[in-house]
Length: 291
Image (cartoon, rainbow, N blue to C red; front, side, top):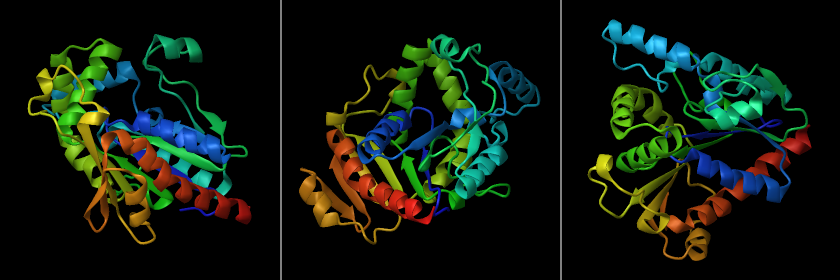
């Protein structure tokens, strides 16, 4: 953790909705005059698209069907830890971009499936904002959770997560339902062993729970809407959280446990604004005083 140059880490798997949450953070940064530099977890994949395909084939030939982008060894976690540590100490670092499609390729001048060159960032930044798969990993090699000052988990119940991924990958990437299903199955081992443990390290988890039938996510025609969902918000340390204020400000919310609030799905943005704004302001105010 760093008092001078704080790090915010938002963690969630593919299809969890971290990109939507990123938009809420950007609103808060803009409104509160916080200069944030953002890095994406995809930038720290170890392989480009062609290399990953070759590595998957090699693993399949060796009868290893558990390897995926979720796996620790498919990512440059040591480099990510270095970036977190460098920013925490100096307010500087470096990152790159993984180019997903033709639109991004035109923007960055790099073919889809490739990385841009590493480039420095951070001059004058108040905070580093990470969004991706592995921002709170703790294992024998790295301890990213110890370097982040505010850790957020975005964790829909798994059937909803699958529905969101299936619809996104079919619409945005042209994948068939069968292809997405194969990806989900291949990632399951690493999801259990590499992704889920991070949610015990997060300070706050936002878990969307649909209140419509999602029992077979592979045939769902629509993603459950915010109006068809609840969000369970769990605080790792509820000390200092003004629960009566939150309940009074968010109509239809209630406490389900001493450290958890349930809010209507269409109130997620409001809940995040109310909860996260004072935490971010406190981090930045303290940091500016110490520089």
